[in-house]
Amino acid sequence: MLNVLDHPLITHKLTHMRDKNTGTKDFRENLDEIAGLMAYEICRDLPTKDITIETPMGPCDTKVLSKDVVLIPILRAGIGLVNGITDLIPTAKVGFIGLYRDEETLLPHEYFVKMPSNLPDAVCMILDPMLATGGSAVAAIDMIKKRGATNIKLVCIVGAPEGAKAVMDAHPDVEIYLAAMDEKLNENGYIVPGLGDAGDRIFGTK
Ligand code: PRP
Ligand code: URA
Image 1 (cartoon, rainbow, N blue to C red):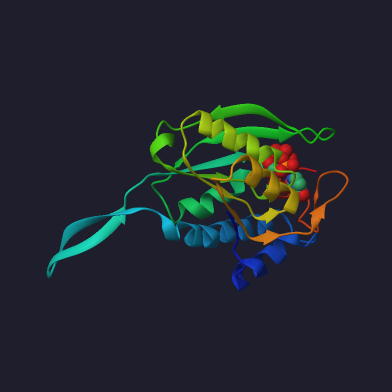
Image 2: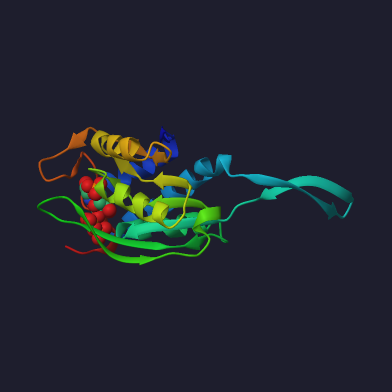
């Protein structure tokens, strides 16, 4: 299922990220803020359980979250989404998947994996600002399914139709969340109009 979180605050902040004149500091800050706004929406359906607590006035039947949340940024650029979400869900555990996209073939190559042990019981959110061909996202989902994850959400900022289709074809059970669906990929596999190379813009490389 594809969800494009069309919201004026998200779109406004994304406009700053897209602007080629926006520098590293503002790019990171806007990404942080968008991640938090998206997480608020994405967490609407987090499972809860009933509990009774005592307020100063007496008993209160209420609810708390019933499942752990695991954030799984795809290195490098996915790291840019972590802080905005842990601000809202401070108990979230964080796993890492290192993938880079070969510039010629556009295929993802794995170079690092480190996961917490609670994947099978957790709500797992794979984080990456860009969903281009979808190769990295499909590989990351394959990797966490192999480790037992079943409840998986893919959280990206900008997507291309090709990438969304690739993920929906390979993993129809995964919920996809985007801040924007762009027009297309160019001949180098970059999203147009997009925002350029997310990793380079977050970390100031190039
Ligand atoms: C970028 C981006 C995604 C991937 C998207 O990472 O952050 O992980 O490309 O492309 P795809 O959908 O076609 O797989 P990149 O490989 O450039 O690595 P980086 O984050 O280290 O810059
Ligand atoms: N990776 C990026 O960082 N940007 C794109 O547009 C496509 C892949």
